[in-house]
Length: 305
Image (cartoon, rainbow, N blue to C red; front, side, top):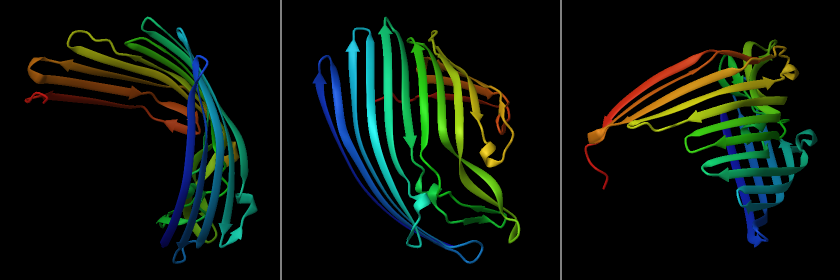
């Protein structure tokens, strides 16, 4: 097979910042223009492909941050217009040429006092699929497996909520992420009639996925010993019935890590690190228990210049 790809990218960004009342106001605009032509030719194991994608993105944005004694407040808003033109062998494909108009907000409230800090934030993150994800070409991995993309993928959106709190040596984090149209790869039969036994490793979108959990980090210093304990709990809840998969588990997964650093006289340093994550059944996946232990002993012979 032979694959020839040509890409062109033109981009511009302008930002204006100024003081406004007791805070800082910034606003601006951003434009991105891409042009990709992907020609794939093969010897007969699948089909040839000629994909031409033109995409234009126009956006305007503004954000404002304010510091009030022990509090910090920040809000922002972005409007984004995206137009895509998808051609196969020079013919415009209307179904694969969407137009999007999206509002992307962000907000944060923070507090800090006497070495303690806490913050609550919300952010919408919008990701476009990579060009290789949109390719219609079917490439050869082995006589049992081919690979392809999906030209019908849509932008992936994350609604992310994060609560942080901590001090100089302790930190806790709670998070929730609702993802719309999460990209995933999965296997399915390529063509049982013409290619029996061959699997196609392709792309798809999961309509709704919830990811949530917590992380804890403690790192005190006790003489020559600097321990760092990390622990957390993680949930992954994805409804994949749209892919024909009926399994739907939602067990929590826990992980623990202890990193021990010892600094001794005469340049000697010892590090012992161990971690373990528990087994879990989450969404349509079976996760096995894993763990590692690492140790390193070193000595410095020359002082820093």
